[in-house]
Each structure stands twice: as C-alpha cells, then as structure tokens.
Image 1 (cartoon, helix red, strand yellow):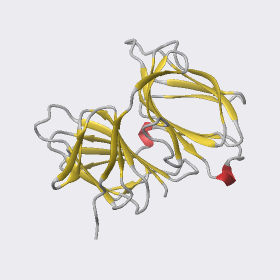
Image 2: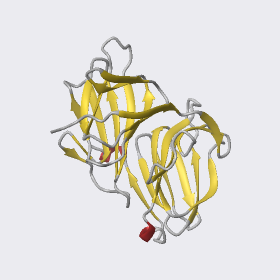
Image 3: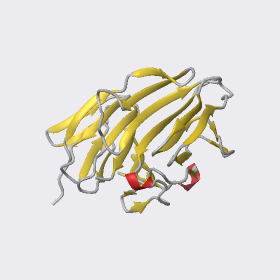
Length: 253
C-alpha cells in the first residue's frame, strides 16, 4: 500500500555573497539544514558579468551544476575546459582533488547567469578516484507531461511516470527532477522507500500533501520530507495566476 510523505520542515534560503560578486541562496549547508548525507551544499546562484567563482579547490565530492539561464565557462588546472548553457548540466567528480573555476558569460540583455549547484559527498572508497567531468545537454533530458498537460517533468536523473533518465552521471545515486505545474495541475511522484527527499521552489507557490494535511510553500523555500512513505503529492491551486516550478532531489538512503 502506498503512503504519502509528510513534510519534516520548510525554511527559506537566505541570500548571501559568495565567490567574487555572486549572490547565492544556500539551503543546504546552513544552520537550517546540516548533516543531510550525502548532500553537503545546495546553492541557487546568480552571477553578473565579472562576477563568478574563480580558481577554488574541491576534494572528495561531486558537484552537479544546472544552468537555468545564461551560460557558464569552466576550466581546471589540468587544462579541461568547456561551457554549459541554459538547461545543461555538468557533473564534476573531484575525487582526490581538483582546482577549477566557474565564470559566467555576459548575456546580451545584461541579466545574470542563474543556476543551481549541488555538492554530494563521495563514498569513502571513491574519495581518492581520478577527477572526471560529464556534461548532460538540455536536448538529452527526457520530459514527460502529465495531468492533461498541466504538469511538465524534466527527468534529469531517476524515474518518473514510467520514464527513465538517459544515464547515470554521478557515482552517488541521486534523482533530480525539474517540475513545472500550471494552475489547477497536480502530480504524484513515487519515491524509493527509505530515500531522503527535498524540493526547492524556484518560482511561484506549490502545495504539498494530501487530504487535510497540505502545506503551501513559496519561492526560495526548501521543503524537506520525512523518510516514511513512498510518494510525494504536489499541486498548484487553479486560482493561482502563475505556474510554479521546483526542483526535486533524492539521494540514496
């Protein structure tokens, strides 16, 4: 028998300075949410031209960068370099250690490059592995439409409504979805039993829960779910003027 997951906590990601001139909303790796293994940090960042994240080290972890708008150039000390654009992702395994930079390109309209970056702790046996990169382009990401087109789900990794992601890109099993819900739309996302799960609200407001146990969560908030249960229900009231967009993340147990 399926059972919905209750909400454990909801909190806003406060804006702060990071890197050189960049602004981030950090929702994991703050006093509001620590020790959420294997997640170390989640930043929702915005960088204008000239700002960004110059040379800095990583070790013993993987980073997953998802561009929401604009483009970012990356380069490391071994000579690897590349660019990810809106809708693309980069999976970087730091392993035994790497020094790299991430700098946004200037948008024609002067708007900032916006994205999300998740840090995932590597298992002990992989902390000394060789560094590597894998890019996932927007055109490679499968999308499913449910609830008569009122819900769109980009399956970056994992499974949703009978559709699997293209490939596994991280050593640590992580499911990632980018979900847009129009007013009046709803969905139920099945989750592996025992996995942690949370959602970060990018735009609008989303109501989570079923029956009389529902909570409406606004933009820039993180929703952490209880482990008990095997599905999450989400909806946007038909009275809302705008669609809502949120990213869901599930690490392995």
